[in-house]
Length: 204
Image 1 (cartoon, rainbow, N blue to C red):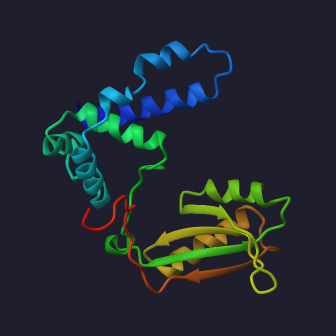
Image 2: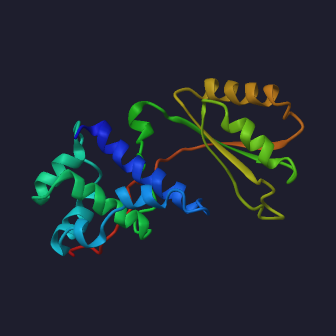
């Protein structure tokens, strides 16, 4: 199974689960049973599960077929590794898979969090507009902390040069007619440790 097919397998399982969760007619129940993970059959042994959790904590191997490499290390199959991960997703032990990008090592040292004070009735629309910009890597809403913190919408921009980032923000303000909105631009000075989730206590 190739790396792409591994990802597709997870995606297929996720899609099937999503479809079934939204299905009120039972139309998809037969399809689900065809690919549903068998908890008794597909679960790894306890020791294999412990090893797999420890491997995932460190991040996937940098290889074309990372799940196959993991399977070989655990003396099992790639399909069983994927099935075990799917079981943990269903049990909410794993919420999602994602990349931890160490942007400073890639030269992105002009990193700005732009905080906006958007009227509540407009915040969803403005968030959608900002999210549509390729330079915005994150955009999310948070409650205001009055009286000191009036901002309720945050967006993150990673850049290599402060002037470029500032120009991008100015362009967004102009494009979406946000000049009337109170905002602040907070450039970061320090990168804190970035790491994936921890599933086990140290030494277990």
